[in-house]
Length: 328
Image (cartoon, rainbow, N blue to C red; front, side, top):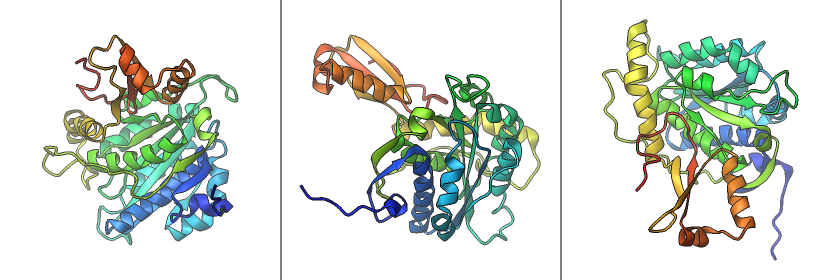
């Protein structure tokens, strides 16, 4: 067996493809990868991160501070918010950087983070920012830290419904690998559809560690063919409240659905063979739990297809493509 030389800083070294890191560190790796992917695409972008700590994202700011050297080298600024609303407003403001054509970068990609109560109190900002839209070379991710069992919170919370209400697409990663993958998909979708993108972060993912594939070329992200309205879907230098509302309802949701479908974010994992009898729908962390449970009873893909078990993985619960779960 060949042993590889491993260093603690490997997780933020873009030359290293197989790395071991935590969910919080995966957020930082994803930011660095987004900046480098933009550079390779000929874009001079910068990054901005702001939020307010709270379980299960209580340690994210500590990891960001530890990685300040690597972040600075990639033109990524971390500025903790005085509270959740001001942090979200700052992320909204980052999308205005390219409106006048006077900035030093082509765009700014941003991340907001906060726990459930912080999501609740920031709803007004999310609604207005999502209506205004993200920038063409920017994009915004909202990391929602959900403490389902109220292990270190004053109440249990699951905040997907607030993002559905504000019409922000939601991504639900199954593990540390998908925190990176869905972050990159989320930025691309945010730019394409002109919306923010929310990523659900539960303790089992953000506080766990894993060995992941972090190769820069791992994902081949597809922007689908879509009939854009005049002026596109990104943020504009104008005040048009009803126009924003129309674009959100008539175009942005459909554009996000088209992106989700084109990139297979909701997909069949086990077909169940030619005559499936039982369908199992999984979302987020439960996908890996179900895979483990099936393997524990000796049901791998071959066995599942033989006995007629179809397994469907939901990566993006909203908006859901019309044909995503149709039976065939």
